[in-house]
Image (cartoon, one colour):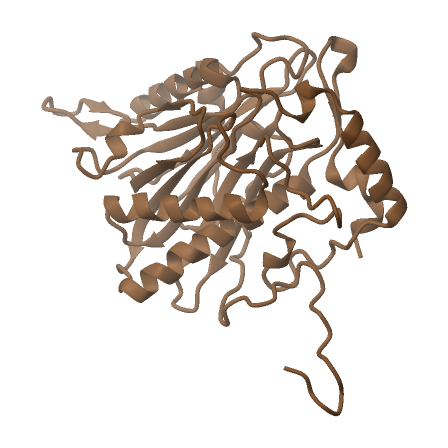
Length: 373
């Protein structure tokens, strides 16, 4: 509203979160582990000849209720059919996100074996015999290191599980985001959380590896920077004109194998809450969380992306009423969008051209004038 004496109100700075609901703030770490009971571990393979990895989201010992929604046209997944609300299994022990395309699904074997060694999983008819439930999704990072078949293995999955902790999630070029790209920039792992006015926590973790871009080509700003809570993204400003012009020149010169050819993509992740949700509600939450992809990436859900989101409920807080559930699900979508921005900002440049791989600049290296204001 315009004050006739003082004139128009100043426009909010990027990252200050105009329009955010009152009473919302990031959790203590602003990452997925702000949902109590969840742990996150990475296995990062970035030695010579490698540029890939695994991220494991590990549930409490009794598991969590889960759902999934797959929107991309080229998905690579494992154990997603059992998350259909019509099917029996209602709790999962971990979710694995990995690089390596379909080869990388092998990482889930290591997580399953480690969980079984710990005596965790779905109980069978035989006393003490359990089958760990580990849904998984992968992204395409093959050949980015210069070596096509260097892909995550069961041992890498076990390593990610072993490193899982409740410490703040490490973001950037780690785990499943090690070889990721987003448009013409380096991608990676990003995470974000929010504590709602009700006290419910919602959080997301995303491995950002999209055909589309996370950056507005006109301004150079991340599309979703305005969704930042409090001042979490207030240090991000608009790049100066010279950097923006130089970035456009670089983008126009990118070979197709970097800009995005069929199969060279997929953004995957997890959204979670401590509120009690049913399996069907988790599936719906995963679907609405995909709106966060649409707020932060353009284009999104293409035939060349396998975009997949899992939704988890630890059930530590009561079930919300329909209005509270709507607020929770919408918050999940915003957490996904914010996590994508964090992944873009946390990524670091990589150059594997000497080994026959690719070179990708990070957004921060392309636009140094835009960071730290």
